[in-house]
Amino acid sequence: MEVESLLIDDRCGKHVVADPGQTVGCISNEGSSSGMAQLKRLEGWSQPENKKVDPDKLNGRLEYIEEMLQKVKEEERLYIACGSPDCSSAYVIVDSQCSDPHDKLLHIDEKLQCEIPLQEPVPLLAPSLSESHLNQSGSVGECSHPPDELVAGGSPSSITTKPDFSRLKGEICLDNLSIKELHETFKATFGRETTVKDKQWLKRRISMGLTNSCDVSTTSFIIKGNKFVKKGNEEGCNGIYGSFAKDPPIVNQKGLPTCHVGQLDYHKVVPERRLENHNLDDNSGSDDHQKEQRAAKRVRKPTKRYIEELSEVESKESNERLLNLAKNSGHDGLISPKSHVRLVRHVSSGGRTVITRLDSLGGSGIQVPCVSRVRRSRPRKNFMALLKFNPSSMGMAAALVEKALDDHGFPPDDGNENRVLKASSTPEHVHHQFVGVPEKDKQFSVMSVVGLGNNTDLKCMNSNEDSDDNVVTVPTSKGGIRRKHHRAWTLSEVMKLVEGVSRYGAGRWSEIKRLAFASYSYRTSVDLKDKWRNLLKASFAQTPPDTGMNSRKNTGAMPIPTPILLKVRELAEMQAQVPPNLSLTKVAGSARKIVHEKQTGFL
DNA sequence: GTTAGGG
DNA sequence: CCCTAAC
Image 1: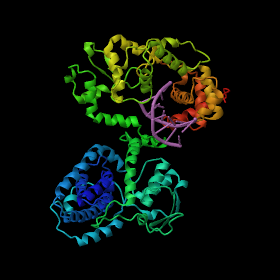
Image 2: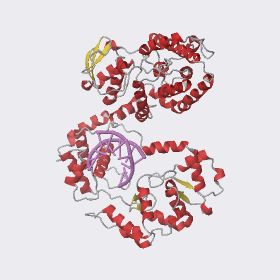
Image 3: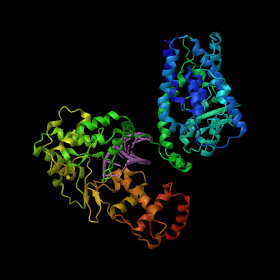
Image 4: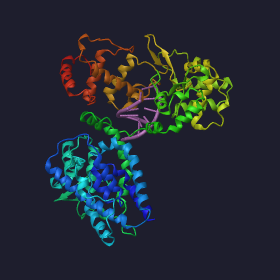
């Protein structure tokens, strides 16, 4: 029982473990010797960015580590004192539990370590710790190491200094602070710099740091000396760890501190934060520039599909199952599961990610599109359509035609696409072979069944709009290909859009759609938005070599007249939509230009 | 339901 | 143009 509680306890701390800056916190609440293991591991980490550390800070850090080691020793003693014969095995279990995610997350954590606030719950927890181990003083186990051994040769795990709350004085309302001030506050709170420019993020972090909790509801604080008082409620919180008063450590019967409520909450948040940071700092190997730009953008967490596909890579089974499903063609021996993964992730010519693999089906050597996991939305829809309707060609064709017409609406202009043809060649032989096939695999089944049927089917699928992924392309007059659903933007549409934006403002897409594009049923507000995005890009891209005005390296698309682009840019600048990467220099230069080129009657 | 942003 | 998270 004891061991179990320790394990649970440890699990709680696991997420935090990987962050070196967090070591103090995690050891103090870890209640197991795995803290030691982590510390050791920590020592092994080579820090990628070995900035110079000022000796004072270093010393402070070393003191810090020693302090931690002290705690570790105590913990160790405690742990061993529990006397359970299972102690050693428990240790192993704990360790393996930790090491697995650790390895995977290492690279993330290196970045993460500078993003998670350095918490110092120790001072509060320490009393309960020492108190409890007073009763249970046992021998120091063989696992323990003298502090020096660990400290020696160890590089400081992060360039943090101790938080300096003295820098924070009086009343702070994070909402009113500029980024710069937030940075100051951040530094004072966590003892380190940050380059993140996202106010929300900064406020949250600081708020969490100050309250030492996940509570970010308050952004106003009153700092007195080294203590903070949450504005409004809780007048008398005593100190930066005041919030602990609300969440006292839960102590089990043995007096071992376990996760306390606040920390549980905290850990709950960690995975999310990991994603968030991963997102934010991905590719952060480069420079702060990217980071800053990203921070300004809306933060997106990875999509489910992304997560799915990521995890998918790791699960060999599914691939193997795929292999089997794909018909054991005997050639599979050539492909190891691993390389197969890579093979599978292919991008089709249509630009859409279609997972295909070359397989010799019946020696035909055709490309078989397949999906290792069910795609969302459309494919399923199509499949349902296939299933739902009786495979009598009439019903099928009718349904598809209906869909096609539905999808298109009737365009005011340029409405001469041969719609009915699209639905005419329906794979009628896709009968109910897949009845009983697990839903997950249906998509694939359709593919393979069709593919196996005969090759003409496959061709047919490729030309049939409603098959596969809708990756259907038609050749354009200019030699390129374009998706069948694509409807080129006409100049008048573009102008309407520009006008709409100038009138209602970029971002009011639905409004623009409603008011300016009411008659264009096939342009959705999203389309408008997308087009505007492209216009923006174009307008800011092609300015410099403006001399020839019609510098034409076009890819077949209708070139947008320079005047329009100029107006786009003007609007963009007015509405502060200047893409961040086409940064100041360019804009500054061109802005001057615009002054001259202006007065052409726009706006 | 709309918008932003990635694909 | 699609998809989907964020709003």
